[in-house]
Length: 401
Figure 1 (cartoon, rainbow, N blue to C red):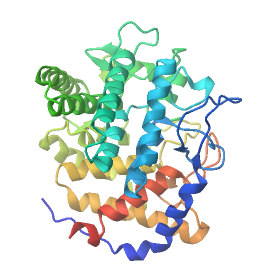
Figure 2: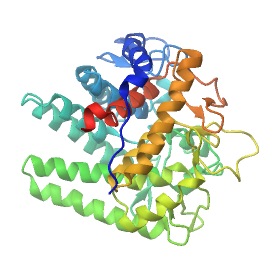
Figure 3: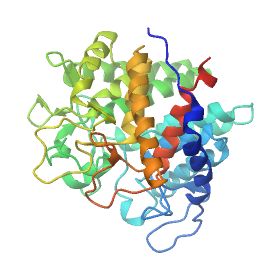
Figure 4: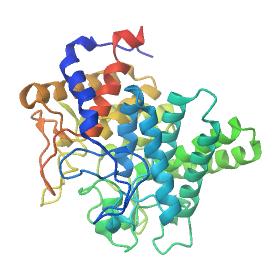
């Protein structure tokens, strides 16, 4: 295992000051149903104060919370989790965001990871009951949405693995549920694929729930979730791992074959710790498919749709940088993790010096704000701010010594 290199956090001081000052501009309170938004009981951080003002997105919130707990705002982060519990109780779903027209679609699930981040930040003996309530809400989500065989919008479809699927059961809206809106990854047939990122996230739910139930001395339930995680891991190795290419791919269960399309989603098994060390070694060898001068591209550079899609090469998205960096650290690839983290921090520093803002995504070939598609690439973006903050402290000499 390589020694973790460090950065001098003072080199990024201007960016840090901007991030800390910007929280107040993107903290929203929308307690009543009004127009396209429904009300939420607690304040929350929205992606930015532009086109996403007053939106609490599902998968954004995990990455935002990574920064909030580091910024000393764990109570605000806890309120965001409580908002999700409120939505689940009111609507029976954790929707992709707090808008009426999104109630038929969720997003890639990160709820257990959010809960544990906040609990670790707040734990002083007073939050054990809150953690129980939140983890049981995550268990309901796992059971009632992602692995429920009786839903019209069926997610659990093949050998115990799940797919993205919206209430209207369309390829287009299922792709929205992935968070990758839009991408060449699913070849416009998202419903046909068992996505590697989704099933890695569900594996992490199962291991997180196993750990939770063990911690509250319920060994029988803990063992059940551990067994479920082992079954999912075994199936993912059988169906999603391509030993010849040394990479995890989405699986087209309709045609019983691997996708041959390289996407950064293949690294989620490292983040979720379900890959073997031999698989991780092969995955690292595949980094050149994605790594460019300013970070990791979301996909391979060739074989893309004729119509440009924003989750494709050459764009790199902050959440995916985080997932890969943490996955590499999980398996001891510290030099590779540091190299990618440094590229990501520096492309943000570069953008900040030129525009005085951080951005939703980046073109990792040119080092400029990401190429737009469905809407203009947004400035002042919360998940970018949060991940920059977290990585600055994670790799700072002040915190790793």
